[in-house]
Structure formats: structure tokens, C-alpha cells
Image (cartoon, helix red, strand yellow):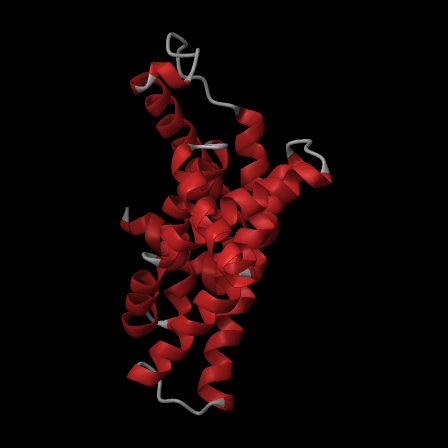
Length: 216
């Protein structure tokens, strides 16, 4: 394990972007496998919601490849430059002391308000088009999945990023984020696979009520 860690450190130092691209693709692919396993187990526990309770769990490798490509093409390269730029901007332009309360708070706010929603929007749109859905279907899927994912993820990621920006050296912040991306990719894939689940409709009903109040 120590040799593997040293090898990763060397790759990160010599080829930072390539290392992040490859590791992100692998982790997001593994995350989708986890999401498929969770979905299958849920279906077996609630046979009234599906007719597939007697089927054995089989990995959908096409879906794994699609999700993995999102890690390769977006999370790896964009995430690499995002965290480097964010650190440089807050230190140099805003002139905040690294690891100070304002420094960490500014990073967490920027990450949660800018990168987080963009990541969700691109993920759900990409998964829809890559799965062969029409533009109208993708639009409906995004409307259905975006808000639940944003709210649930918003209750977790700020705490993850506080620890990241406060205690993890900048060089290893991407590795830290990639580790949690394994769980995040599993969560987002699970959200996408849930379709029109009742708990999602609850979020939609809240949005509808708020819209009606605004019109009133």
C-alpha cells in the first residue's frame, strides 16, 4: 500500500492532469457499479415496485462506461484546474490568509454555489443524452433529478470541503475530492437510476407549491 501511495504521488507530481483524469474515470466507473448494486438490492427488498426481484445482479457495463467517461472527460480535467484556480484566486486576488476561517469559507461557498450546481447539471444532461434520450426527455429528467441531488448533496459536501480546504495540502486536495467522488458518483448514479421515485416527487411538489405561491 505504501508503494502504491508513493507511485501515485510520483504520477501526480509528474503528470498531474493525466493522473487526475485517469483516477476520476476509474472512481466514477466504480461508483456507478456501486449505484447499480444498491438499486438492485432496493428492488429485491421492494418486489411490489419491480418485476425483476428474481433476477441475479448483473453489471450494466455500458452504463459503467458512460459514467466513467464523465469522470474522464469532465471531473478529472475540469476539477483539476478548478481547485488550482480557486486556491490561487482566493490567495492572490482576495488576499485571504490560507487556512483562515474566511479563506475556507470563501472556498466552500464558491465550490458549493458555482462548481456544485454546474457539475450536477452537466452530469444529468450528459447521462440522458448518452443513454439515447431526446432533448425533451433530458430536460424533464434534469428537472426531476437536479433539485433532490442539490439539496441532499448540499447537506454533505460543505462538511467534506471544510476539512479539505482546512487540513489537506493543496497538492492533495484533488486526491481527497476524488476519494469522495467515489461515493458521490455512486450517489448521483443512484439518483439518476431512481426514475420517478416517490421521494423525488415530494421535492417536485415543493417546487410546484412555491411557484403557485409566487403567482398568487
